Image 1 (cartoon, rainbow, N blue to C red):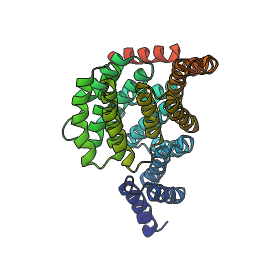
Image 2 (cartoon, one colour; image 1 turned 30 degrees about the horizontal axis):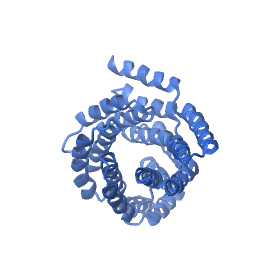
Image 3 (spheres, rainbow, N blue to C red; image 1 turned 90 degrees about the horizontal axis):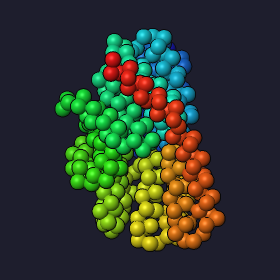
Image 4 (tube, rainbow, N blue to C red; image 1 turned 180 degrees about the horizontal axis):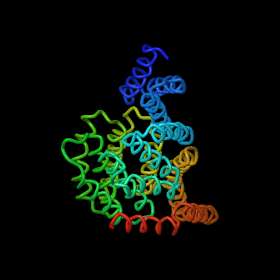
Length: 337
């Protein structure tokens, strides 16, 4: 491969990164083009970055399985060529993909690998993202105090020299934990810290998340009109993050329930359920079934309510298993040694 071709791969990766939020479709296409050249690339680091970039964009568009294939190719290069810092980044991103699909045991394994071996050469950022991820698993198991503990630990590892993206990611998770614990003042305080960081980096995914959590704060305080305003702001953002769209639909359903517009709520939640099924976000699926069971019961439609409650129980058992929780505790014991 000629020098000009190597430069082309580097350019494609760089441009894909630059256009992530400015033009997601173009960013995805550039990353795909880079991956096509990666197979014949003699520079292992460059080939790894091309596969990793394409995987990240596939994740962003909700194509988790294909993104995992790309990341596993990148991981093979990192392990073969002994590129520890990049290996850590790939491990934590793969963990996030497994988490998104509700495959928590696999996610714990990958995040655990990022934390157990302190001499592995992983970056501080990778370790912080791993703590964030473990907190998210606790959150999915509705162990909100434990999730907050993990996320506060992640926050304690950050410093002002780190990227706004990473610091915002930590703060958004801390805010989500406070919300789940109905600590609305604390959640709002943390979201106010995260917002300028998300704005500075032009990170529209995080901007959208902050707005959705602000809407949750407003709803928790009984301010449905304000909650709608925050959702409307989130929807103006140009986004390809499908699980974020699912959160918007679910939240709109909850707002409509609070406004006693139950038929409209059913429509919103059913659309959220369909989207969650399409992209395989299992933890959203069981929450949607749970909400649907409640709404149908309120409407006096007992058959539909019982159906969705059974679906909720089955999905919950698949996602929130006792073995996963035991695995989390075992990992914590290893980390405490």
